[in-house]
Image 1 (cartoon, one colour):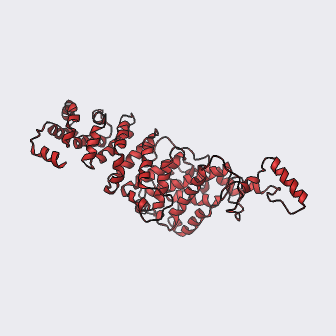
Image 2 (cartoon, one colour):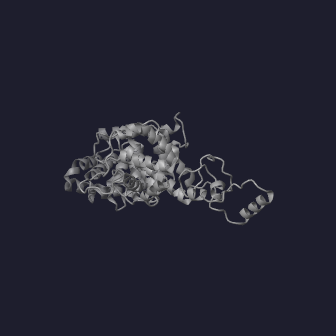
Image 3 (spheres, one colour):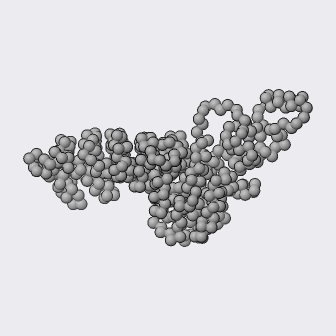
Length: 463
């Protein structure tokens, strides 16, 4: 077993505490150099891949998951390092899927009974020990898990292989007194931490790093699940899954970077089916996330300086607001959302501009109040015009920016803010034929008299 542990630890590589600067959306696990993919390749034993293969080098038989579903779930629930490593590597390979690849043998892994809960438990186990709840921990005798001799994490083998046991043997009182004085006067021996530290399976720094790797690998697998259409409905209605995702997003400043990135990408993939009311439903709750707390978590990431994170947060907000049931929870934060999205539009990164425009387009379609607040936001119209005039390399972004301006001009109260740009609208009307119809309608709305029937109806009824 020790030999297998050494082989697996070599395959696991370095700690998974950092993520790439670019977002991984659209790039399922296995196409990059992630730690879990490296561990999967090492465990497979197929180190030489043909140069003609563009996908994974290891092919897994389609019947493998069907024949080993119970074993995979039990391995995840066992908490043993060797079993966890095997299960996570196996699931990483089974959940791999290229962005445009339609796998006929793809298995809806989230539908396997107990699998999603077992993966979430791996992440919860790491989060329980990742952030210290108190600054100073008082010594406590180990009570929970006392019957489990070895879990495989950290330096347990070294600690338990020492000849000096932490439990003194029965003998004379003088020997017991001498042993107790020696323990109090010297530093704790390697085996002492096993019995004195607080926790179910007490671990040293190396064991904690290994637990962190397992949590990141589990989040990678859950992220891969979210790319499969067969899994979306089940995951979007799984309260424990959503609570875990939003808790990781909420702690973006102190949580593992790759764990936060995977949680954001999973939430974005599920956003079109996500109903925030699930956090107040009768389904069993594990973390007690509320609707307001979930939106505040997204707002925190939206203000992050990491481009991949605030782009994903903008896209997540834009998808959530499409569902009318989410509007009561999002609209109270609308002024802060608009301000931050307008700031993102000023960034030189073109993908960030596209994410901000897409979110603003969805918000401008909600109701009249959203359009009024957006027009009142400083620099909003100016930066939308600049994105169209540049132009943005993605035509769809320019089209949505023009549609936002058309939505804003449909409200009579917004005309004073837009009349300043009348000359710019006229210039774009004649220069760019792709958006000439849109700017023609914008100019017509700006120059229409108040007595116009359509303008009067919009002013009265808010059409």
